[in-house]
Length: 119
Image 1 (cartoon, rainbow, N blue to C red):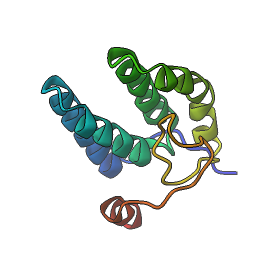
Image 2: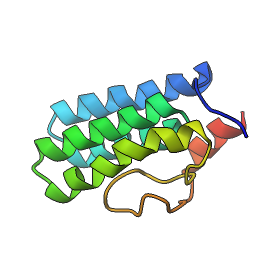
Image 3: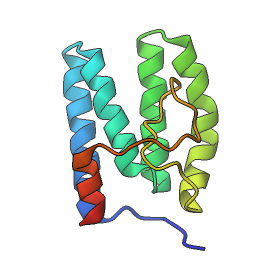
């Protein structure tokens, strides 16, 4: 069994870039695009415990800030279990991480992110 602990530097760059874009669009009040960048950060970081958990933490905070009860409640179990599943390599690849999708459903990878994983 392979244990994932540290995100490769190459992927971390893109993960952090999505978080910067999330923060910028959130500050501008563009919540649709902000959420899109959070989902992309989740997809890129979901195989690594810290990045996976941090994406869910930000999703929880996002849900609180826009007063979305479903999102807030949906993020609690993801926060508790997501990092552990990443550590043991049992994540649904491509899952965007929001409460609007089942937590164990694999989803298609966006093409640009798929290319990041192939490099």
